[in-house]
Length: 160
Image 1 (spheres, helix red, strand yellow):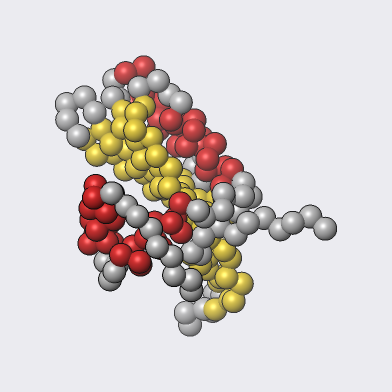
Image 2 (cartoon, one colour):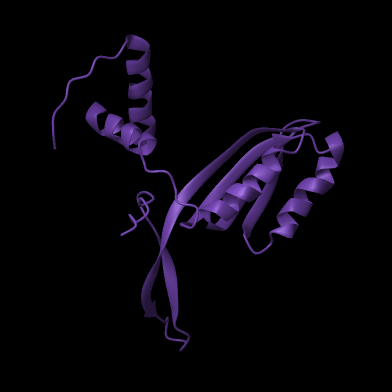
């Protein structure tokens, strides 16, 4: 590892310290490595496998969103792992949808939700996955494989 020196103003240093406390980092270097690593991760290739958390707020009464949003999820039932709606107040709910599949697919579904007028605060968080081809069973005779969570998306292979 290389050592570098950086200068941060007090406000930014307070934010780094808060991140350190919240994340469990044991020192500022660890906290800064985490923040830099997250922000400099390579862009996710569209065909990379992932799980995704889509979150947004909406007023279900506006523009018939109470019907449209579940319809978007139903249209993509093969990609939706879970969905939850949390009432925030009398007119707003926080929606959370967990998707699975290729990055390009889950990104398109999230954007279809975010583009509905009346949907606000939309965020998409991707978790990179890879297939673990080691097959095993739990003694019931049915073998299966798992997905494993990766630290980051790998950059696409360079064409030869």
